[in-house]
Amino acid sequence: MSAVSYSPGIRENRRAFLEQLLQVFFVGLTIGMQRTVLPALAESEFGLARGSMTALFALVVSFGVVKGSMNFVSGRLSERLGRRRVLLWGWLVAIPIPFMMYWAPSWGWLVAANVLLGINQGFAWSMTVTAKMDIVRADQRGLATGLNEFVGYGGVALAGLLTGYLASLYDPRLSLLVFGLVVIAAALIAGYFAFTETLPFAKAEAAGLQAKAQQNAAGVGQEARYVAGPDNPTTAQIFALVSWRNRTFLALAQAGCVEKFVDALVWALVPVFLVAKGASLIQIGWVTGIYGFVWGISQLWTGPLSDRLGRKAPTVAGFFLCAAGVLIFPLLGAVWAWGLTAAVIGVGMALLYPTLIAAMGDIAHPAWRGSALGVYRFWRDLGYAIGALAMGLIADATGLLEAGFWLTGAAMLVSGVWLIVAMQETHPRR
Image 1 (tube, one colour):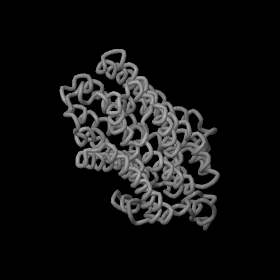
Image 2: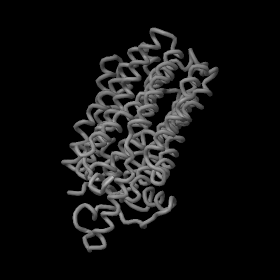
Image 3: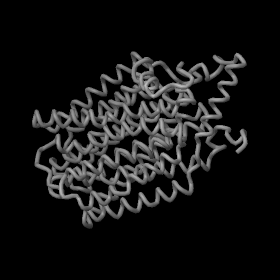
Image 4: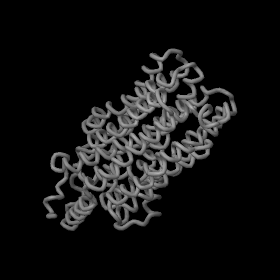
């Protein structure tokens, strides 16, 4: 391929961009297929002891720990082996998951299945994000991440709603088996035959920046926005730089970690809370589906919004909006009210979620951008585990499901204030 073929831009690389969107849709379907059914049927179908919130949240904890770790691993691997190969490995790991859910004799099997799901997500979803950062221009990062997360979380919401209906009409385990196998098979076939390798784009961009630096052009334009780092950083150096050595990277990493408290809440606690309030499986599917659909579709405007206004303001607004919705949710008592509040939380997530990723892409040098995104996503998805464990422990200690909502709302407020104090605007033009 000639050098001109590495020109960045969505229009210039629309085929590769569409291939990536297809893959993230399959990834969303894979994670969403269990979000309605498993927590709601934990006691009746899988033998989980009544009221054991810590055991219930073990499903999310196992997923978060493994996915967070695999995000970091996949980022490093993709810079050596390519984005496409890592993506395919993620789908191969997913093959046993539907069978484990079908044959599961106990809740422990589902926790083990979520370990594999964490590997799948850490490899597959990470590569759709990294590949997009490879092929888009700096002024398109918000739009690109918004589209990516719109399609991915649209898949999560759609799968949650569909599997809720299927589990109500047919055998829940058989429904998850068939749905999961169809999705994973389609993703593997598409990934093998239709996923463009984008690592050469990142290498070409890095080489171009190096050439400009040698011509004394460094510091002019967007290059000056990149955080200074070693030319060929080690794994430890990248991890330290993103995790604590740079003030803005640290602010973004903590924000990513805390915002996953909200998703852990909707994944595991909201279905149980709604069951306790007398909601049906289909009603639960609609409430959690509204959250996912609004989150997904709103990113079509929140991503581009951050390209125009900058990254900091939308992110902070999203944190405070989520906090308000989460704190109000347990005070309500009607399905329509829960659905409306779920939509508010979805808008908040849409404001912050793609914007945080775009901010990371703004200041991470293309030579080690994949690794930097991997470290950010490590801390972000570790938030599943930290939030779920904290919510489970506080719910068991107090005997109140509402305590998990209070914890999450407070954490989002504190994290939003941290961003105000510590995050610098990262947009190249601002």
